[in-house]
Image 1 (cartoon, one colour):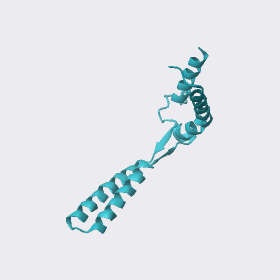
Image 2 (cartoon, rainbow, N blue to C red; image 1 turned 60 degrees about the vertical axis):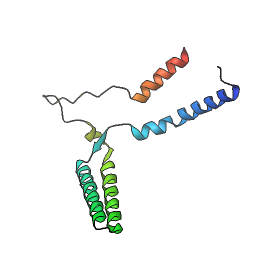
Image 3 (cartoon, helix red, strand yellow; image 1 turned 90 degrees about the vertical axis):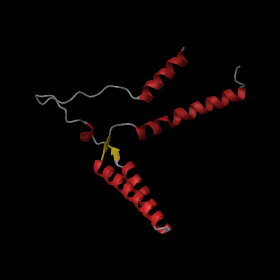
Image 4 (tube, rainbow, N blue to C red; image 1 turned 60 degrees about the horizontal axis):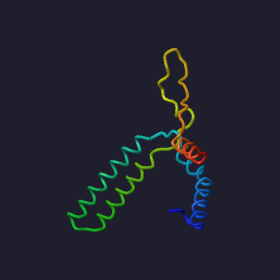
Length: 126
């Protein structure tokens, strides 16, 4: 069943908006990242401590202790989940340099969005 004229216009507009905002989406989520494992470990410890405080609050039947424990657990989860940041140029390279002091080769793999975009363009051309 073919699309009506209005549905086709709406689809075209959605595609234009997708292409327009695609660069913003890809630039914010791509690239190598580094993880601060100390923050992850501290966050996990805070989540565990927060859950223990929640249990203590339930046992002594004092709601304020349970709420404080929940807040501690949420804070720990946020700390652990925000422990990664974009890598800087020197941090992105691994320390696996070959013997002899040669620098590692740069990766030439294209990103998922680039490959999907190429496939989309090929389909549109056919």
